[in-house]
Image (cartoon, rainbow, N blue to C red; front, side):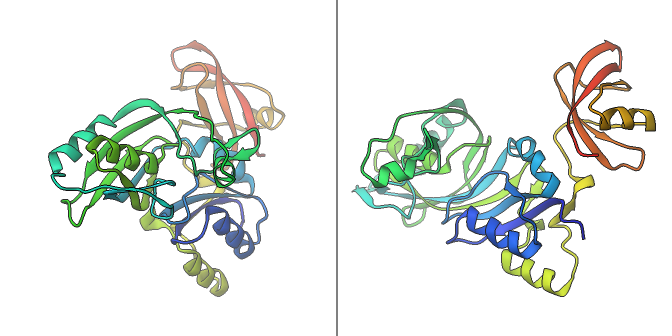
Length: 302
């Protein structure tokens, strides 16, 4: 089996995303592995790994929106904004009700600048936030534009805990959302559980745990649907099937004239040959007429 493609892994709690990458590297005998968005050690669910040539596609896949299910614990705030951190405040939850929680959640839906939690893997001048926080250094207050598409309760409040469903853009911190909800309702809160269900079109139901992957690799069993071969990796833009002459030009990094082109100038396109092999990713360099334009290859594989 080719070791170039996309692997869907269902991460267990307790290990880091890097731990998963290291295990898969050994199992799949592939040194080149990337991932499309990390999960915190306590979080579970879908990790999307790019192997071999597919690592060059990571930047296109990492931007995909994410869907999570999780749990917020009210009345207890931690320094990491999740259950792994040190408790920094405890407040009574008397009077806490669903209308107040729902209003707090609704106020966090939209596009805005989000400040990452102090204990996270974000870097400033090559140093990760959590390294600075652990040394007692002041973590800089930076922010990033994020979009929360949906943030809703998925069950009722029970024992100061609430299940929720979150749909958001890449780079959104669920921990920060839980912390902000706690601040808005006045009793504090932290993220007590998180599971990633989807990344773009990819579903955790199709993924394999690392243990299950090891069993299948050892037995020689098929990995599908957790494994998507390189030529069949879906990308979030249109596809163009090229002829033999265009394929030769693309292989040499030269632009091609394309008919039945749906994109606008600057849009990315996936380029296939007549055998539907994935040969390059390009951009629409110029629109000449209706459905006609020039495509410039940017990442060439064949």
